[in-house]
Length: 168
Image (tube, rainbow, N blue to C red):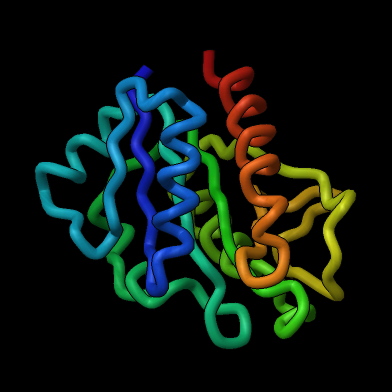
């Protein structure tokens, strides 16, 4: 299976999680791109992948990471592609906008008619509010590298195992 991870990373945390995800998939036929480095050749790789994983952190009061804010989603065709989203946020300082960027990314990808998988139950998370919740699930994998870095590896592993079940 051909997998592409596309992430935007300001401080390196989202990139580090992309590396964890790649490791969990055993690096098999996986390509990672920082969204700021996308060119026509890399976009072609994205469009021929069977699973696309989008990563963003939440900045300000619930915004996408800057490179994603500047990215023109019209450049890529992901209609009917299987996609998953992971996001980082601060569940204590920004407890009322925790991982809101996941919801923004979800809305964009859904409008492009992507098939979105990888919803995660909110059980075990501590936060006040998030736009990234539907029912009792996050619209992707929510992580907090600022306060709960010790939970990241386990959450990534569990999430990737669920993704594997949904794309084979």
